[in-house]
Amino acid sequence: MVATESLSRDIMRLIVWYPVRWFVAVAPLGSVFSLFRLMGDIHYLISRGKKAHVMNNMKNALGERLGDEGRKTAARYYFRNHYMCQMQVLVYPRLNRGNLGKIHTFEGLEHLDEALNLGKGCILVHPHFGPAQLPLCALGRLGYPMMQLGFPTDEGISYIGKKVSFRLRMRYEAMIPAQIISAMSFLRPLIIWLNSNKVLMMTGDGAGGGKFIGKFIPVDFLGRKVLFPIGAASLADKTGAVILPMFISLCDNGTYKTIIHRQAEFTGDGKETVEEKVSRFAQMLERYIHKYPYLWHLWDEWDKRLEKSLQ
Image: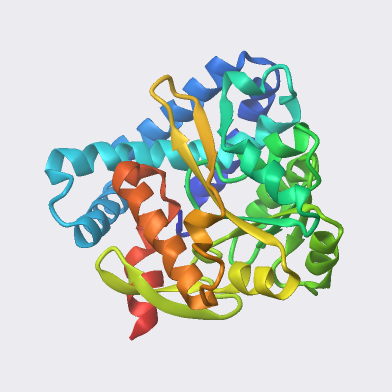
């Protein structure tokens, strides 16, 4: 979520990265996730402008599909999702093969295995949807050689944000069993990684935060022409790596399921252009948003990042 820096935000950072972080380190996972959801509920209840903005963007994009009450519920779960995503990095050092199943499962893991059996590497292209780094950590714990292309930055945040929040987040992300490469750095390591028959995770809906890194093209998405990046599809074409779409869903019991789709669902007969692959990914994301609107991270920047970017 995009937010304006303030004293209250810095106070919240100090609370999160000290007493809350210490609680997360020792409490049962169920209690930890209940706390994250409670933090989201509190933010939803005290928020006015942000909540109204998110609900208005949902209405503009989805029309009356949800209705007033549905948008309220979706907005509440959107706030929960924000805290689950931001706070789960504190849990990753505790996750192992024995306890991963309590919070997360995979569907379609055999598609990843089939891709790696071809020996050309695999790109898992995913949106900003649900706890996006959870499958990165889970796959690393399962022994897959993982790399993520990300955009870690402390640009525009306060002194406390840089010295406490960003510094400690980078320390915790370093505990994830994966390499994380900045999208602003030299990208040759990505090609070397894929040529070594390893797994690369890349976002298929941009960097978030209103950033446009790399080349974007307009595609049909939620009834509008919206910019989507071509990086993952272009890299797959360049290296010969298999590219698989990956999405996270929320189960009825509060756990998460990562679904790795077959290559054919993304690339069809293999003759599609880069533009057609990007469009197909956007269509898949649209279907997931209709089913789990609250899991998409970018509702609060929909009007700025997506619509106005084409003006």
